[in-house]
Amino acid sequence: MNKYILEHVGYTVTDPQTGASREILSDINLAIPEGQVLTITGPSGSGKSSLLSLLNMMRDVTSGRILLDQEDIRKLDVLDLRRRVGIVFQKPYLFRGTVEYNILLGPRLRGTEPSLPPGQLLERVGLSSSILQQEATRLSGGEQQRVTLARTLANGPEVLLLDEVTASLDADSALIIEGLVRDLSQKHKITVIWVTHDPEQVVRVGDKNVMLVEGHLLDGGTKV
Amino acid sequence: MTYFSLFLALSFVLVAVAISFKEDLNLERDLLAGTVRAFVQLMAIGYVLEFIFALEKWPYIVLMLSFMVLVAARNAEKRGKGIRNVFLVLLLAIGASELVTMGMMLGLRIIPFQPQYIIPISGMIIGNSMVASALTLNRIKAEVENRREEILVLLGLGATARQAAGSSLQASLKSSMIPTVDSMKTVGLVQLPGMMTGLIIGGTSPVEAVKYQVLVMFMLTAAVSLTSMVVGFFAYRKFFTDQHQLVI
Image 1 (tube, chains in turn red, blue):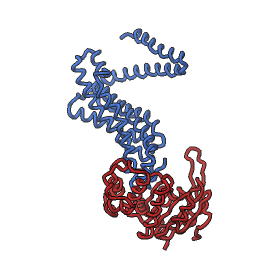
Image 2 (cartoon, rainbow over the protein chains, first blue to last red):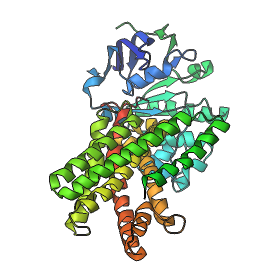
Image 3 (cartoon, one colour):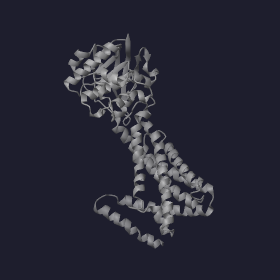
Image 4 (tube, rainbow over the protein chains, first blue to last red):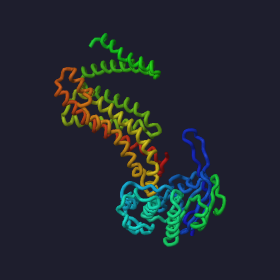
């Protein structure tokens, strides 16, 4: 079953000063199966990050439509959509405070409980629950990225959007994150959409790869 | 004071004009225009106040205060380009701050219902509220730009625009209130404020003048915080869509 279906998706930005418009993504057709890891590659400026931002409605499509579980995402409650579709950025951004405070941030924003106790979430990303009370911003880069992953998992997402999450990490930390994400996808049926520059990473983690060049999908795309 | 003495005071402006000319600051025209405007505006307000004070009728007081709020909102409006209905927001913020603080002072009988008390004190409330609004509008844009990464993380976690902009809003409110808080700390040590100085020159005893000044300082903290809060609450929305998307 497909988790996401993108039908003729286009995204154009208009400069509010000059009124000039620029096409970022054009006629994207793509089906993303549930529980798989889809990697998106392509040169800088090809529209990879923009595509991710359309999937959790950080931006709106300017043409076409995106379906999540067969439903147009524009008909969903946007705050609920962003809890169902978690995003992790390239640079781990943690708030000053303990690891626990950071992990509980998402659920606290809406006054609910996390999908799992914070200690278990840490263990799920390969960290010891003993660091819960440590200052989050003092952890190493790799540990910080794993905490941001745990923070996203605290919302109980069905989909993970990963925007070059290992680009600022050393090789060992990157491999750890790759293993964790594969694990999340296989054991917990989380659909992963992973933007990466690294062709070897594509081979290691991806069930399917698509390439974007100047806003167009080159291969692996699915006609729908 | 005679008009001749006032004319001699122009020599002070000439000092500034000379410095501008010598240092090539290119401010001569602005200085001269400012001098003429200040003279004309203040003389005009002097005659208007004399007229209102002599009438002692409340509709004229309300009219005068409304005009002051209107001018203050129009002036602060320039800082909020792109914010929907910014003029109305400023009218609401500055008007509410005047209404609440002046209402409290009259209601609690701290000052009598007489134009010579209401209008000058309102001038201070409205003027300070105007500056606070401009500071809030200026600052909130810079804060949202600087905290873009933080805001995107919060939105990605399912935060509302209000939740995501929380720290930007907090920082801009703080920065617009700091000048008032700082002047409260140094008043009497570094500077003798205008109202107190004016009362002393006018022959009021220094202790009586200080009482009014204390009242004004306390009142301004309420006015400034109230205005900044209302302006900030409306201004942050400019940077988000209804779908909680950051547009900066």
